[in-house]
Length: 174
Image 1 (tube, rainbow, N blue to C red):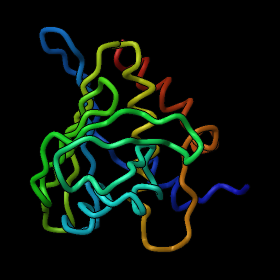
Image 2: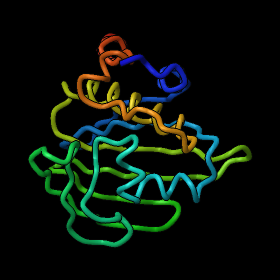
Image 3: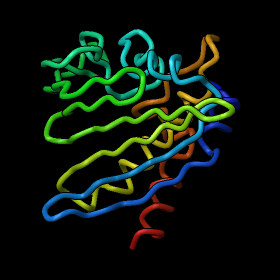
Image 4: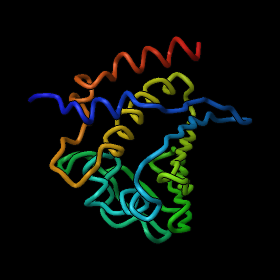
C-alpha cells in the first residue's frame, strides 16, 4: 500500500513533547496546533467512528459521559479496560486506559486550536515509543479532512517513520 504523503507530512509537522516526573509516575506531555476548530477536534476525540480514523484507542461508546468503556485498537483485538473520569466539552477529557491516565485539553486559537495530551504511566523506558506513536496518530488526526485516508496504526506506522521518531525521542531524552 502506498504511503499517504499528506498524512506523512502532518506526522512530521511541529509537535512539542516533554517527559515530566511526579513522585511515582511519568507523564508524557504533547502539544500540537490544529487547523480544526475546537468543536470539530472535540468530536474527533470522543466519537468512536471518528476515533477509528486516527486513534489506537477506539472505545465501544462515545467518550461523552463519565463511566466505564472498553477500548480496542482493532475490532478483533482483546479489549482494554477504560474509564472516562471527567468530561468538560469541548475543552477537557480525562480517561483511564488500562493503568495509564490520559488528559486531553483543547484550547481555541486564532487559526484553530491547540491540543495537549498528557499521558501518565509507570515505566519511563516507554516514553520514546509512546511519544513516537502519538506523533504518528496526531499527525493522522491533523490530516483529517473527511477524505478517505489510511489509519496509521500497528505495522503501518513503520512506513510513516515511527522507528526514527522513537529513536529521536530516545536520544533526545537520554
